[in-house]
Length: 327
Image (cartoon, rainbow, N blue to C red; front, side, top):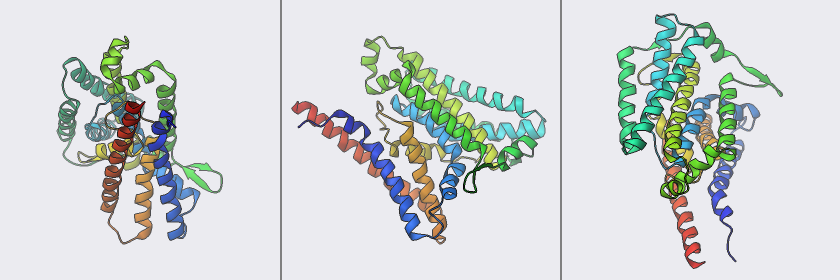
């Protein structure tokens, strides 16, 4: 009996969700106080910026691209925001839209180079990473603390929820971004075109789809998500520093891949990306409750999971291709 293609499409997502709940239940068994709603919500609070930037990375990987500049862009947004707020005394009402515009411009330029100049995404975004990091140190080589009242309020205010729990405004931003991304990918022509490009770019061109425009817009959207993540990160850290978010691009890529989006593109879900981030969050929480392990064990665990999921994706694709050839 032929297995429906739908089963393959959602297999990685199902495994990711099952893995998260397995880890969370294991923590509940091992550690007293782990199984609580606030512990679960803290994973969102501590990883809101990673959720936002991982959503943008999901779009990039769906079209078969990659962007390793996002961590540097986040650092640039934090540093530039801190400089404008503290040194030049700008209002947050001007700084936040400007940072979003800079992120969009950054992504737009990279998208243009990648598509119209036929340059490899890795090389273009590597140059973007060096540029953004360099600009951070042009602004300042020191840490710039953010004392603006609005940023302080956003960092400390807690939105009360039932059962004596709470979330931050950063979580609200992350949830809104997730909802918008879910709608765009599932219910718009732009989303369907992105999937088509990742599946087979030449076929998408033959179908008359706007491949060039969509690729550029995907990188622009990713730049916007990176800038927004930088704003959320500045709420979280209340400072700008050139070494902020070092390696965060790898955390985002790992979250997206563990969430079921292959590096080859064509398939992907923001729901899976969310659970990919939460898996990193639950591993961090397990290490914190354990008390004796270094936080670097999170990286080791994620590296292991990443390898497992890449192998799993390859096996699933090979099995699907084998069934197609038999049919």
